[in-house]
Length: 115
Length: 116
Image 1 (tube, each protein chain N blue to C red):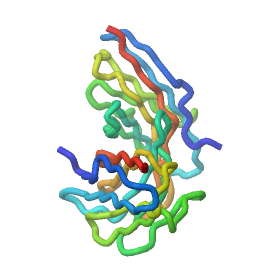
Image 2 (image 1 turned 120 degrees about the vertical axis):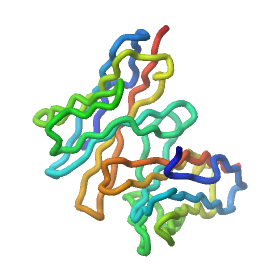
Image 3 (image 1 turned 90 degrees about the horizontal axis):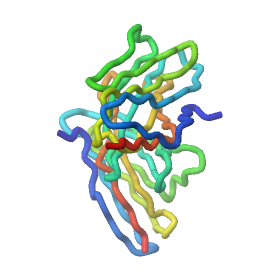
Image 4 (image 1 turned 120 degrees about the horizontal axis):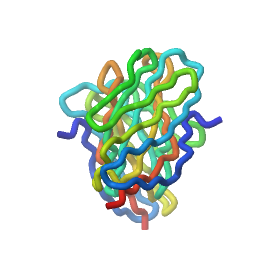
């Protein structure tokens, strides 16, 4: 069964609005979660590392004010795409590792379409 | 420089045959981990196999085995007895960095197609 759950799996939003994607670890506490973005037929690009109780660490080129990440508890991290534009349409996927880090599980992913 | 390199954008294999998917990596960390994931068209990332940098033996998981050659910095995935359901994208990934600050980066992937 899934150990990392991501919601929603698909979302369509209007340009200029914000959308929140949730990533939950099931049956384990994830002090660190990762958020990736994947364009069609491309690899996963790490956006940010989400640490429980502290600010996320963003990768170079990722706008932290546009992609807000909150890791309020040991089982939940959220990614909010603010003022979404059509170019933000993509597949977003989160992951969490089970200590000691030998296994990293991914959520089901979220397809975002901005119209 | 690329951290993870997968030089095969696409591969074909006959059903029931074995196939090797190539992966080379670049890191200066003495401690790191290597992963292989399968991504079908639905988008989910399915964990296949893990190899730690200090592991003496090559990892195996059912039909999957990892040919780990540390000196060459390669971590090729071998799939034995291919099945039609193995058709998917396959990504090699590496975890590196100090504890608490680790990150995982992915290669560009290899699209595997199994031919009946």
